[in-house]
Length: 146
Image (cartoon, rainbow, N blue to C red):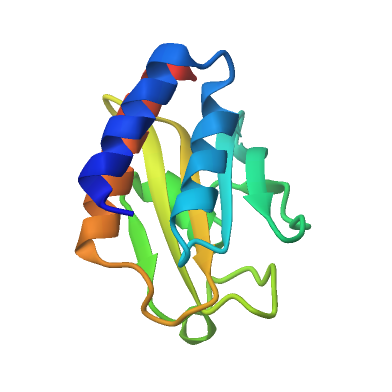
């Protein structure tokens, strides 16, 4: 799917949905083949707690301390993390044998981290600058709904 069209459709979700987080996750999973697992984690105290997710199977990592793993590192720094090969990054908390790459996009309001979008791919080097910019726009929209 074209990213501009996808952003337009996501804006429609924000206008029409009563369960925005879940509907955004479902939309991304359905429309982007290289997104094999998608979850939104929300900050609770010093942890990331898994909210809505979509994928072939659930993850055992439903609660991640901020600062631990790639997700926790992104939450601690406030910066998007793109990992082209998860096996080459010692921070990676293995969820699925099939995962080859990952992108984690913090959802923040000003300097406060509210949560993050975590996406795995079964393909190495799956995430581009375009994915990063696209997902950061979605994260910016989500910060008003958390």
